[in-house]
Image (tube, rainbow, N blue to C red):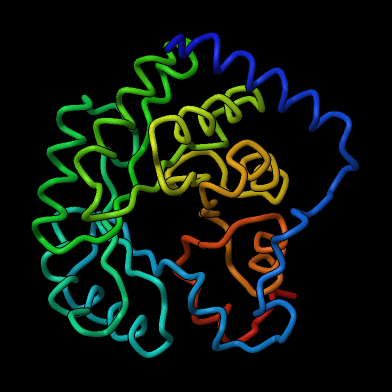
Length: 258
């Protein structure tokens, strides 16, 4: 498989189509029931309740787990050192434990990312959010990026799903397309916009572009800056089905910033 040739062709094709598409066009099939009904309870399914600050203590973790159980969030997303505790708090709740890997820089070796994933799963993680090798992507070392993602996918499947963080704020549109295409080739389950530690967060335009690349086989997670119901709705309409945010309660309650 000539990965470089595949990615170059996909990137060219997607960018040509994006250039001819009407600006701001939403994904044709991305109008979840929550948007149509306005039922706040439905929004919980889209939320990865996220707490990744280095100073996070157990009291904060417990609070996030209690909130996730109350509002029926999809997951609680934490650093690897906190996975076992969070998994114990969420046991039997239906809320999944999510761990970040290679976070936030993506600059760990593939071996370490895979090992980190394996340990997180042993400690109770059911979802893994891994950061790609951003430098290799920008150098167009597509085989390096592909194998990096594949190492984590192989470590996780079938025990946990993989969300591939591409850090959109650091990339050109062409690089975003290439990153998503590589994630799809490697068998990832999601592509995700941001770590929250970069220079920017999710935009509806980025989500639309990412969804255009991956199609129906892979889902899109929007992360960073999803602070109220209005922004959440924008991301859902653009094609995202998960939101990485610490503001999930505001979203469920329908709160909107002035």
